[in-house]
Amino acid sequence: MCGIIGYIGSRKAANILWDGLKRLEYRGYDSAGICTINNNHILIEKDVGKLEEIQNKINFNSMNGNVGISHCRWATHGKVTKENAHPHCDNNNKISIVHNGIIENFQELKERLIKKGHKFKSMTDTEVVVHLIADNYNGSIEEATRKALKQIDGSYALGIVCANEPDKLIAARNESPLIVGLGEGENFIASDVPAILKHTNKVIYLDNNEMAVLTKDNVTIKNNNGEIIHKKIAEIDWDSELAEKAGYRHFMLKEIHEQPRAITETLNGRIENGNINLANELNLNEGELKRINRIIIVACGTSWHAALAGEFMLEELAKIPVEVEYASEFRYRNPIVNEDTLVIAISQSGETADTLAAIREAKKKNANVLSIVNAKGSSISREADSVLYTYAGPEIGVASTKAFTTQLIVLYLFTLYMSNIRNSLNKETIRDLIGKLRKLPLEMETLLTEDKGIKKIADIYKDKNNALFLGRGINFPIALEGALKLKEVSYIHAEGYPAAEMKHGPIALIDKNMPVVVLATKDVYTYKKVLGNIQEVKARGGIVIAIATEGDEEIRKIADYVFYIPRTLYILSSILSVVPLQLLAYYAATDRNLDPDKPRNLSKSVTVE
Ligand code: F6R
Image 1 (cartoon, rainbow, N blue to C red):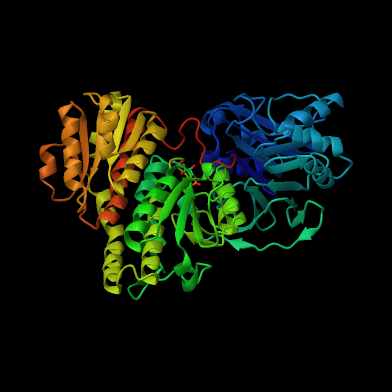
Image 2 (image 1 turned 135 degrees about the horizontal axis):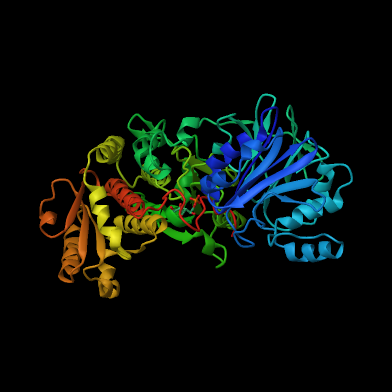
């Protein structure tokens, strides 16, 4: 949604904050700003635009002070204007705040504060918070914040500084992610780990209704009544290098190329003597797993596409009935869930508000909740009964790539684990399937290193406004994902369809201006039918880009372009097939001079409903 970073220590705060914002820009990039305190004065610089544009207008380096807060915004309340950008300040220029979240009762509070003489400069919900704190200020910023929070309804991650108390940085959280980073003689707050990873790997995850009081040498966590809470310090094992571009032009391209490594790390330690072992990670024993008679998978966006692929895997191999739900819909339709239902929540960020709410709904109804999450220590990972992590590392590109493929890997591991426990597959078959799985990272590596002409294929999209993606079986969610990637980063209207559904409507769209990606890898059920679908597209003048299995010469005769992927099991081929679609979207965006890392209107982590 928005990104927050705060610093208190002996170094120049503005430089650390600016550098941290660059690592958080994926959370919001319509405006940004920094506040520091120097000689008991508040300094604020902010403007609209992406960080590199703002950098050309403002010299943040001229801001002195060893304590400060900063913010990159993704607008919710109030347009993208300089006035609406954070940090915000009270009327006496004594208190400044940055905020991520939504203050639901801001209108009512604003009217009350205006009556008391407060003057508002912005249209944001955030500004009421700083006025409210100022209204309660009586010499202690900590106390004033606590009093103000009691009057607020809604979600917030807040960073607060006060000119009268320059040795303090206050943080508070409810429903929006916030971490505290512990350094030597300096401390940090941030929305997400990559912002501070360069300085420390020791973090405290704030929970709802917790506040942190930071000085340069100390951090105290308190509840909203001011009572001290003792929290666990987590050590992050992400490499700070991983959060950099490492020579790639964009994070998206780097993260596409990181997939073989990410998959290897996700497999690590989970395969033992030719078997999958997830027992240590699951809070359900074999008896409980056998008793599950239904699985519901909840997720949003790309993670929802992974869920659809997971449905195919679990029904095909583990023979368990599975339903997939948009997390945003789940809690609004009274789903039938009981203690024999396993609800799986999939999320890269672990902070998606709708997915979190779906988990809470499922738990209320006594379901066991398993989460598949990338961000360690995130809210979803903590609230679920069990968590299976994807080890994709930090995903900075707004369009999800390596998180998706590692989600598919975890779903496949879980499927094989369940297949073994429930005897839906024999040991030998499982061993064989695991053998093929182990080869996947290398096959993907080959796919990524050999030049298979995807950049040239992407040129077709240069002057196109629409695109279709077709697939059947497990390739249907891959088609949806290909379409989502293309529209997100290149702004070309794209749709994914089950290939056979095309003739029930979308075929009317096909003409010589319509590129159609067809996922046509070989399987026992639908391959021949998909060839038929290609013929239907060709007969109407459409341009066909086929994703096919290496060695398939037949398809060359009917498709305009063919992108081959290595021969592997049908289910695993879907994990390879998404790679050319990610690259297609990337090159279609860069061909149009768009920045795929920062697509318009999008934010990496959707922490509001
Ligand atoms: C698409 C994308 C989004 C996310 C969705 C869920 O590229 O990144 O569609 O997949 O917002 O986010 P998580 O997985 O963090 O819950």
